[in-house]
Image (cartoon, rainbow, N blue to C red; front, side):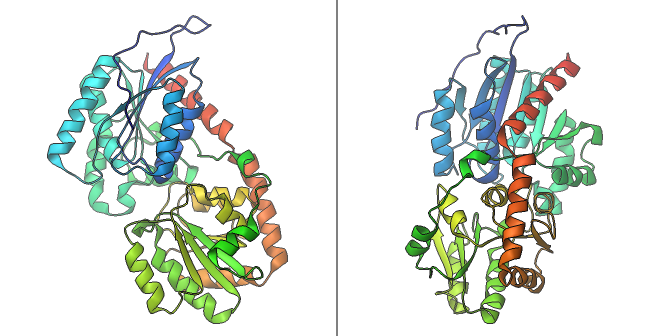
Length: 398
């Protein structure tokens, strides 16, 4: 796919006579939740009020991002492809920094909003080197410190380059405050969201089960996401093992792919769960899978929001999730689902079994979850909130 790289555009006046706010989004992690958040913002930005540009890397993009990128470019948003590696690679990182610096200096942005760890560091540094007048924002989308505390000195140093951090949930904001990277007054949050209407009345339950080889009358428990350490698919398998020993008519499914796929399939076979646990691989549209579920589960070690959890709730599914940032905010324990501690297979399985045995409770939790998403997590509100934040921060900087 070709990238659209452009020279600086002249400032355009809005109907009120004020110039449009010039915003640059920078993203390396062009897959999963970070890509979803950025694409949703770019696809719904008010381009009468905001002059938007987008710098991105395709090194680890997924099919959904590539499809969204075409739509983003179709809106006339200026885009530039800048290869960025996820891991620290000094030579490649310096090259990416140089390209970002030149693009920002040439274009003169009011807001530079960098997303995820690598783009977050490179984007903030490039912005401050190019134009200190720009408001430099950073959204971690699950900060690296949550994986390994060794990253804290790097994030602390980058705090000096940061005018504001933007969390994608209240619970992530609270987590960021606890790390003391920048003053808490400069940590904001714009809660992520989904297009609720896209899930209204979605069905396909029987066809999906038939494709997966799952009996129509079986209870189906499912997860979705990358087969990666963050999502802890091995906890998913331990829970499945416990539940399958207790209940004969329960099947499990995990939609997604990732670096742990081979090891996960090997563990599944070792546990003798091949006929009860299903791995259909990457699914560009998760709605058919989610619609077929009776219970959605999320075994993550950490999150920032939890898009798939929100989607499952929009489809009226009860949830059992780990008590981490994002999930602990989405799921109201005992009302829309249950929360268990990360890594606690027995506690997770106990909560899942209590739901498995109570159809009326599943219906009650599912209805409450759907109502919660409709009230708090619909996409138009998210876009409005982030645009209001940009306007306010630009006014404060002037």
